[in-house]
Image 1 (tube, helix red, strand yellow):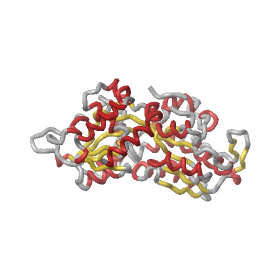
Image 2 (tube, helix red, strand yellow):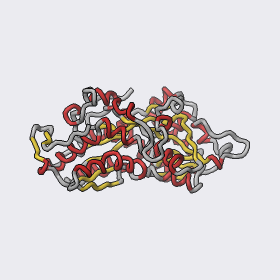
Image 3 (cartoon, one colour):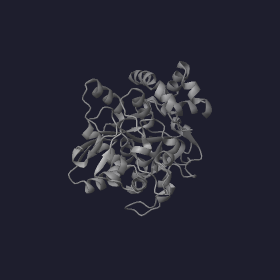
Image 4 (cartoon, helix red, strand yellow):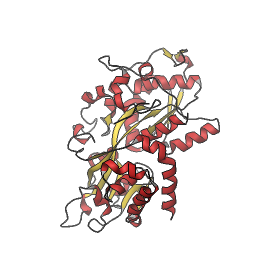
Length: 371
């Protein structure tokens, strides 16, 4: 397992088993699972709709259940009834699904398009291939947005992650994701734990309790969210002063909707998002998925996605092709989480840690929420 630190549509598709499928043998429909909102819209515009234009007989159905992908795939597998064809997940969930045998292992150089200059897919994706079952699409970050018109008079705008915990200087509701990931790390950082020590501390019961105790200091001021679209809506409605979500969702609210919101990039958590193929798909469905994936993850398609949302494409060959927003005409590069101005202080997500500890810490976190 590797750790993080051109259109091609053919009449025949060669499966990993070496079996050749004629186009007529591919399934005529796919269920794709994603996150809804601006991100799913970017996927639809960048590669789902172009693929459908090339294959007008193919029906694509979207399911917005990616936040529940692990639990739902476990249940589907147990019932021997996997209804999903391709699932968009964060990298840590991809590791869990791969380890549990719920996601199919992939060979990047066999299944994915090479870069335009001939660079193999494996080399083009490089270190972002963090799991043998994972095909990365984007680099994104989870960060905070805040209402610029709710900053108290005479007080400077928040620019430090620990301002989230300072309800005296910055009163008002916060929105945090209803899961421990990121929240626990930010809590420890703001309770004096050095960045390099966060995961060592969080691996202990005492460190987990320390993080929960810090979160408890603002628990009464928190609105918990589950969908990525929740915080932008809460901010737009003025129901919260600041809240965490994915940087592309905040970009949409700020730039496309012209909301009075600004970004707080400090300690943004870099992460990856991409596809997994559920294990055990029938051959006709798998053939269709592979054909779609080869198209949807090529260099141009991943660069095209960045025309619609401010997430960095996972292929190195895609980065130079990132240009202007498809509708607004603005340069997208300064809005990427990887832009030097935005990444002065970043926090690197530890995929192995959360793959190992997620279930236990999830249970402890949900019990704490219920108290």
